[in-house]
Image 1 (tube, helix red, strand yellow):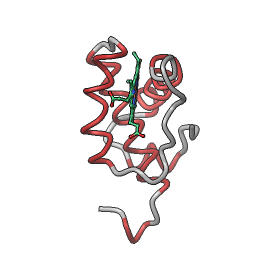
Image 2: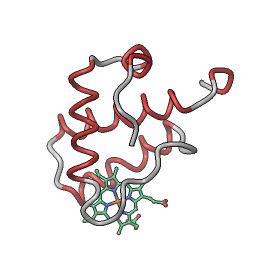
Image 3: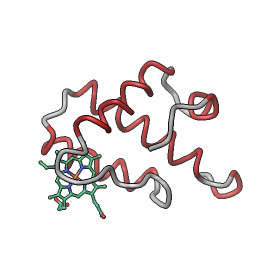
Image 4: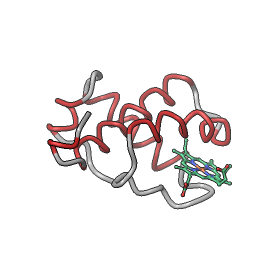
Length: 86
Ligand code: HEC
């Protein structure tokens, strides 16, 4: 799972601390039942739809869920060629 980069921080509406927390949540809370799903190849809409469903499984606090989603969307954007970003 990608480290938080300067580019991800630039692409995200939230600051680095939130993205680092989101990454930690992903590693700790989302890998209990299955390997963390690869970020590459998914869309922001995919994560927006999936995270609430999985956050129920993982019993996430709302703030952690928000950080997780911001992390996944920023990582997804970074992995997307510039021309294909929406
Ligand atoms: C309690 C076990 C459990 C936890 C914790 C969990 N998941 Fe899942 N996850 C599943 C199961 C079971 C499925 C497949 C069935 C479904 O969609 O519910 C799945 C499927 C998925 C999929 C779809 C995979 C695909 O190939 O389409 C994604 C994405 C996902 N999980 C992300 C997450 C994220 C992000 C978290 C952390 C918030 C998380 N999961 C935490 C059990 C879990």
